[in-house]
Length: 166
Image (cartoon, rainbow, N blue to C red):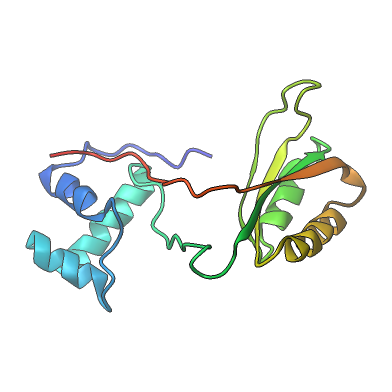
């Protein structure tokens, strides 16, 4: 779904706010106040501008990104599922709501080479724990699921979104 609506191009203040937050919010009790102090804005204006940027689709999300490894979740597996196309959206929403799934999305199949159309990242402290989670996903998907597999992480890759410069 494209949330973008008609919105004027970001002004210099919006661009400064994006640059100040693109590596994350300040890790302080009142991050919007800290940003406001840094940019010469009231905390309410920081929040209003970020909300407008989110609403326009210029900023996609504001959220916490935990380091799963630092939290002890070292068995991280991307589970892939071949799910009936007529049911994949509803079932994907149900899988994405499970507490051990950090993200879940639909992707196109690649013919006979890659039959999977639903992906769900599962985190556990061991592969045995992940296997229990995969069983739960399989129960949620029921007979709509024809096949599945899991691809375990072998190393940590730095994940960053688009960055704007000065």
